[in-house]
Figure 1 (cartoon, rainbow, N blue to C red):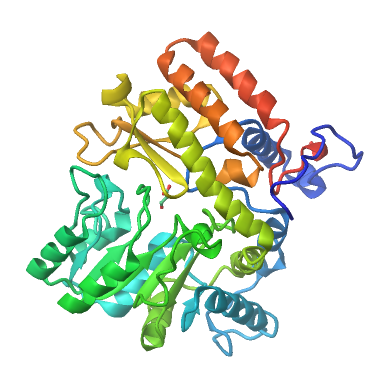
Figure 2 (figure 1 turned 30 degrees about the horizontal axis):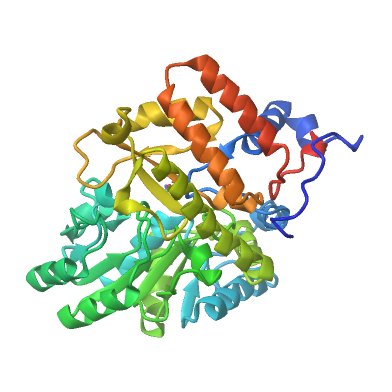
Length: 436
Ligand code: DSN
């Protein structure tokens, strides 16, 4: 599967019914699936945590493994009938261990939040002090936010971005760590557009006697594709979701040193979860295999090139980008002070124009999280379709026009039509329009 080759013709070529079992049993759900396929095909999807899973990933994720219960781990299960599931889970773990250069992998977390929860449970006691990037500065709910388990079960002392550079300030993080002596420091973010210096975090952790937890969920595809450094060999524990830049099914993995392996496994089951979702694990295994192809490397490189090209175009149009630009797959764009439109109003106008993103707080935002000053955009999905710098320039122009005319439905509709026309020229992994 090459994400950057010729698009399939978007016309029906087969007389076979698409999704025939669903047509018979539940046409209403079949219709919603097709509607969503059309939406994902006809729009520019800029939410940086989303992507297109391949046909192969989706075949595995929709497979017979959905039928099986497998509490436990390979060769140590509670139920019988694990002749095949043991092979599957061991294969998925082996692939991840080789790719990330780690001692131990657990592929059972149902998503990123339980993966983080289990990691902390494995290495912390309730009441221990943790330091993660504050959510409004680009962290995650599970990195110590007050209304999340991570902020109530542990003593969370968040670090923030530098107010001038809007980037990580490792000296300040070190100072805070020396002051509060955390048991854990968390690095890895949901809205941070720059390269993370994992070695600096390791050094700070070693100096203050903290464990180091890396959450690479957003950038795992860039790590595997050779664009960003890999923290797992030096982290005590770490997690990644599997459906973002990595382009697998929705799920997660914990990666850790051997000394934490048993505690991590116990934290997942019996600590937090019951049976693993083996159908998801089979999709994760496929995505890991796909990530080792030369095409994936090209994709990862292009994700970054596209983000830089889009950033440059947006800067040219006078938008303010948090930290001034990007080194990864995402851009955090301040729209209120630079363009006089609030983030939610901007994301809604863009959605009308066929450009799908999310509103987002920017560092030191004075506005509400429900209508903040920024929007968050990213290039993984568009790159998976084969789009390149020329399309990013066009997109920057459309975004500028749409946001300058956010109340003008006829302009937004015109752009939506142009976006749709562009999208007809680019395939989507996992979607075959000829079947509709
Ligand atoms: N919801 C994810 C994101 O969009 O970044 C993080 O969990």
